[in-house]
Image 1: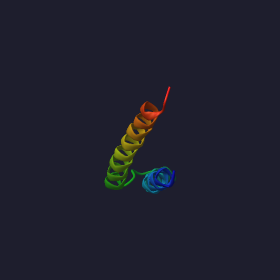
Image 2: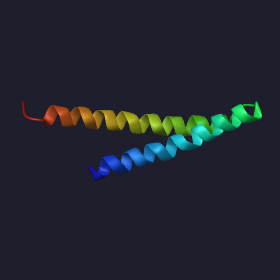
Image 3: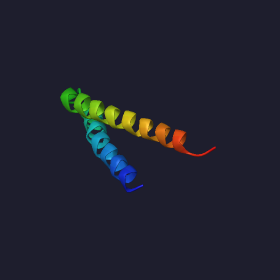
Length: 64
């Protein structure tokens, strides 16, 4: 459970800068820094895939 909490915290850390960039773009009526958005979203997607895979394996390992 501690590992899950660490992974979810990492996901939050990856998504926060994306939201900040999007909000900044809205407020300034300009485009966000796409390099920040793309890099963080790619890392977040990789982490989400890992979490999804871990969840699936966990469910498969449970006794029926």
